[in-house]
Length: 211
Ligand code: BEZ
Image 1 (cartoon, protein in one colour):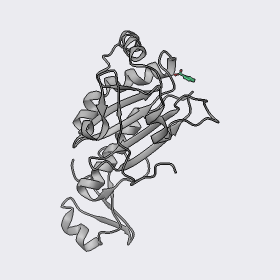
Image 2 (image 1 turned 90 degrees about the vertical axis):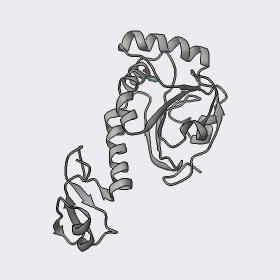
Image 3 (image 1 turned 135 degrees about the vertical axis):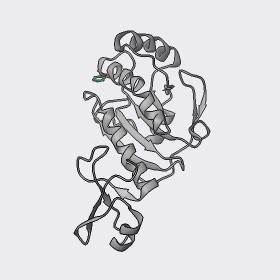
Protein backbone atom coordinates (compact mmCIF):
# COMPACT_ATOMS: atom_id res chain seq x y z
CA UNK A 1 0.00 0.00 0.00
CA UNK A 2 1.17 3.53 -0.73
CA UNK A 3 2.67 5.52 2.13
CA UNK A 4 0.03 7.56 3.90
CA UNK A 5 0.24 10.72 5.96
CA UNK A 6 1.13 9.90 9.55
CA UNK A 7 2.98 6.69 8.64
CA UNK A 8 6.52 6.15 9.89
CA UNK A 9 8.59 6.36 6.72
CA UNK A 10 10.77 3.40 5.73
CA UNK A 11 14.44 3.43 6.66
CA UNK A 12 17.10 2.52 4.09
CA UNK A 13 20.82 2.62 3.48
CA UNK A 14 21.88 3.77 0.03
CA UNK A 15 24.81 5.46 -1.74
CA UNK A 16 24.57 9.15 -2.50
CA UNK A 17 26.70 11.82 -4.14
CA UNK A 18 28.03 12.51 -0.62
CA UNK A 19 28.65 8.89 0.48
CA UNK A 20 26.47 6.19 1.96
CA UNK A 21 23.46 7.34 4.02
CA UNK A 22 21.38 5.42 6.55
CA UNK A 23 18.31 7.50 6.25
CA UNK A 24 16.83 7.62 9.76
CA UNK A 25 20.14 8.28 11.45
CA UNK A 26 21.15 10.82 8.78
CA UNK A 27 17.86 12.66 9.37
CA UNK A 28 18.45 12.77 13.14
CA UNK A 29 16.31 15.44 14.81
CA UNK A 30 15.72 17.37 11.60
CA UNK A 31 12.76 17.62 9.31
CA UNK A 32 13.50 16.20 5.86
CA UNK A 33 12.38 16.96 2.32
CA UNK A 34 13.01 13.84 0.23
CA UNK A 35 12.30 14.44 -3.46
CA UNK A 36 12.78 12.39 -6.59
CA UNK A 37 13.37 13.45 -10.19
CA UNK A 38 13.22 11.38 -13.39
CA UNK A 39 16.83 11.46 -14.53
CA UNK A 40 20.17 13.27 -14.42
CA UNK A 41 21.14 15.49 -17.37
CA UNK A 42 17.54 16.52 -18.10
CA UNK A 43 16.45 20.15 -18.35
CA UNK A 44 13.59 20.52 -15.86
CA UNK A 45 15.47 18.49 -13.24
CA UNK A 46 18.54 20.68 -13.70
CA UNK A 47 16.52 23.78 -12.84
CA UNK A 48 14.86 22.06 -9.88
CA UNK A 49 18.04 20.86 -8.23
CA UNK A 50 19.65 24.26 -8.74
CA UNK A 51 16.63 25.95 -7.16
CA UNK A 52 16.78 23.67 -4.13
CA UNK A 53 20.50 24.42 -3.72
CA UNK A 54 19.85 28.15 -3.72
CA UNK A 55 17.04 27.70 -1.17
CA UNK A 56 19.25 25.66 1.20
CA UNK A 57 19.55 28.53 3.74
CA UNK A 58 15.73 28.71 3.87
CA UNK A 59 15.53 24.98 4.58
CA UNK A 60 18.26 25.25 7.22
CA UNK A 61 16.45 28.10 8.98
CA UNK A 62 13.55 25.68 9.44
CA UNK A 63 15.73 22.76 10.63
CA UNK A 64 15.12 20.89 7.36
CA UNK A 65 17.58 18.64 5.52
CA UNK A 66 17.04 18.08 1.80
CA UNK A 67 17.74 14.86 -0.06
CA UNK A 68 17.23 14.23 -3.77
CA UNK A 69 16.93 10.89 -5.60
CA UNK A 70 16.97 9.39 -9.05
CA UNK A 71 17.74 5.95 -10.44
CA UNK A 72 21.10 7.15 -11.86
CA UNK A 73 24.52 6.19 -10.46
CA UNK A 74 26.75 8.14 -8.07
CA UNK A 75 29.17 8.90 -10.94
CA UNK A 76 26.33 10.25 -13.05
CA UNK A 77 25.11 12.44 -10.15
CA UNK A 78 28.61 13.80 -9.58
CA UNK A 79 29.08 14.71 -13.25
CA UNK A 80 25.65 16.30 -13.48
CA UNK A 81 26.18 18.35 -10.30
CA UNK A 82 28.96 20.20 -12.18
CA UNK A 83 26.45 21.11 -14.89
CA UNK A 84 23.84 22.22 -12.33
CA UNK A 85 26.38 24.42 -10.59
CA UNK A 86 27.54 25.91 -13.89
CA UNK A 87 24.14 26.56 -15.45
CA UNK A 88 22.09 27.46 -12.35
CA UNK A 89 24.79 29.60 -10.78
CA UNK A 90 24.71 27.69 -7.52
CA UNK A 91 26.49 24.99 -5.52
CA UNK A 92 24.61 21.76 -4.97
CA UNK A 93 25.13 21.37 -1.26
CA UNK A 94 22.97 18.37 -0.37
CA UNK A 95 23.12 14.65 -1.23
CA UNK A 96 21.51 13.00 -4.24
CA UNK A 97 20.65 9.34 -3.67
CA UNK A 98 21.81 6.91 -6.37
CA UNK A 99 19.02 4.37 -6.69
CA UNK A 100 19.84 2.23 -9.73
CA UNK A 101 18.36 -0.84 -8.00
CA UNK A 102 15.12 1.13 -7.35
CA UNK A 103 15.27 0.10 -3.69
CA UNK A 104 14.25 3.46 -2.28
CA UNK A 105 11.97 4.28 -5.22
CA UNK A 106 9.99 1.10 -4.59
CA UNK A 107 9.85 1.64 -0.82
CA UNK A 108 8.40 5.12 -1.33
CA UNK A 109 6.29 4.42 -4.43
CA UNK A 110 8.18 6.87 -6.62
CA UNK A 111 7.78 4.90 -9.85
CA UNK A 112 4.41 5.24 -11.60
CA UNK A 113 4.88 3.01 -14.66
CA UNK A 114 1.76 4.21 -16.44
CA UNK A 115 3.14 7.75 -16.36
CA UNK A 116 6.89 7.20 -16.75
CA UNK A 117 8.22 3.72 -17.24
CA UNK A 118 11.08 2.62 -14.96
CA UNK A 119 12.03 6.15 -13.88
CA UNK A 120 11.04 8.06 -10.77
CA UNK A 121 8.47 10.80 -11.22
CA UNK A 122 8.57 14.03 -9.21
CA UNK A 123 7.63 12.89 -5.70
CA UNK A 124 8.04 15.06 -2.62
CA UNK A 125 7.90 13.81 0.95
CA UNK A 126 8.03 16.07 3.98
CA UNK A 127 9.06 14.03 7.01
CA UNK A 128 9.07 15.32 10.57
CA UNK A 129 11.71 14.66 13.28
CA UNK A 130 9.65 11.67 14.50
CA UNK A 131 10.06 10.17 10.99
CA UNK A 132 6.35 10.59 10.29
CA UNK A 133 5.19 11.45 6.80
CA UNK A 134 3.55 14.89 6.89
CA UNK A 135 3.10 15.66 3.17
CA UNK A 136 3.38 13.79 -0.07
CA UNK A 137 3.11 15.40 -3.49
CA UNK A 138 3.36 13.84 -6.93
CA UNK A 139 4.13 15.94 -9.97
CA UNK A 140 4.40 14.83 -13.59
CA UNK A 141 7.83 14.66 -15.22
CA UNK A 142 7.14 17.67 -17.41
CA UNK A 143 6.29 20.10 -14.59
CA UNK A 144 9.01 21.61 -12.42
CA UNK A 145 7.94 21.96 -8.82
CA UNK A 146 7.37 25.16 -6.86
CA UNK A 147 9.79 24.82 -3.94
CA UNK A 148 8.47 28.03 -2.36
CA UNK A 149 5.26 26.06 -1.86
CA UNK A 150 7.21 23.30 -0.11
CA UNK A 151 8.68 25.92 2.26
CA UNK A 152 5.18 27.33 2.81
CA UNK A 153 3.87 23.90 3.82
CA UNK A 154 6.80 23.39 6.19
CA UNK A 155 6.01 26.74 7.81
CA UNK A 156 2.39 25.71 8.18
CA UNK A 157 3.23 22.27 9.64
CA UNK A 158 5.67 23.82 12.10
CA UNK A 159 3.10 26.44 13.17
CA UNK A 160 0.66 23.62 13.91
CA UNK A 161 3.23 21.57 15.82
CA UNK A 162 4.77 24.41 17.79
CA UNK A 163 1.88 26.90 18.16
CA UNK A 164 -1.38 24.95 17.70
CA UNK A 165 -2.64 27.00 14.77
CA UNK A 166 -3.59 25.92 11.26
CA UNK A 167 -3.30 28.03 8.12
CA UNK A 168 -6.11 29.09 5.79
CA UNK A 169 -6.31 28.95 2.00
CA UNK A 170 -3.48 30.75 0.24
CA UNK A 171 -1.89 31.64 3.59
CA UNK A 172 1.45 33.38 3.41
CA UNK A 173 3.98 33.90 6.17
CA UNK A 174 2.71 36.78 8.33
CA UNK A 175 -0.99 36.33 7.53
CA UNK A 176 -3.55 35.51 10.20
CA UNK A 177 -3.89 31.87 11.21
CA UNK A 178 -6.77 29.60 12.18
CA UNK A 179 -7.20 28.34 15.74
CA UNK A 180 -7.29 24.54 15.59
CA UNK A 181 -10.72 23.02 16.32
CA UNK A 182 -9.45 21.12 19.40
CA UNK A 183 -9.00 24.42 21.31
CA UNK A 184 -12.10 26.17 22.68
CA UNK A 185 -12.50 29.89 22.01
CA UNK A 186 -12.07 30.63 25.75
CA UNK A 187 -8.82 28.64 25.84
CA UNK A 188 -7.68 30.30 22.62
CA UNK A 189 -8.23 33.77 24.07
CA UNK A 190 -5.94 32.88 26.96
CA UNK A 191 -3.34 31.19 24.81
CA UNK A 192 -3.04 33.70 21.96
CA UNK A 193 -2.05 37.03 23.47
CA UNK A 194 -2.44 38.87 20.15
CA UNK A 195 -6.18 38.23 20.23
CA UNK A 196 -8.75 35.88 18.74
CA UNK A 197 -11.56 36.86 16.38
CA UNK A 198 -14.53 34.49 16.42
CA UNK A 199 -16.04 34.73 12.93
CA UNK A 200 -18.14 31.62 13.63
CA UNK A 201 -17.84 29.30 16.65
CA UNK A 202 -15.85 26.92 14.41
CA UNK A 203 -13.85 29.66 12.58
CA UNK A 204 -11.53 31.55 14.89
CA UNK A 205 -8.65 33.64 13.57
CA UNK A 206 -5.53 34.86 15.36
CA UNK A 207 -2.44 36.78 14.22
CA UNK A 208 0.49 34.47 13.42
CA UNK A 209 1.87 33.62 16.88
CA UNK A 210 5.58 33.57 16.01
CA UNK A 211 5.70 36.98 14.26
C1 BEZ B 1 13.20 17.07 -17.51
O1 BEZ B 1 13.73 17.05 -16.41
O2 BEZ B 1 13.35 18.00 -18.27
C2 BEZ B 1 12.30 15.95 -17.93
C3 BEZ B 1 12.55 14.65 -17.52
C4 BEZ B 1 11.70 13.63 -17.94
C5 BEZ B 1 10.63 13.92 -18.76
C6 BEZ B 1 10.36 15.23 -19.14
C7 BEZ B 1 11.19 16.26 -18.73
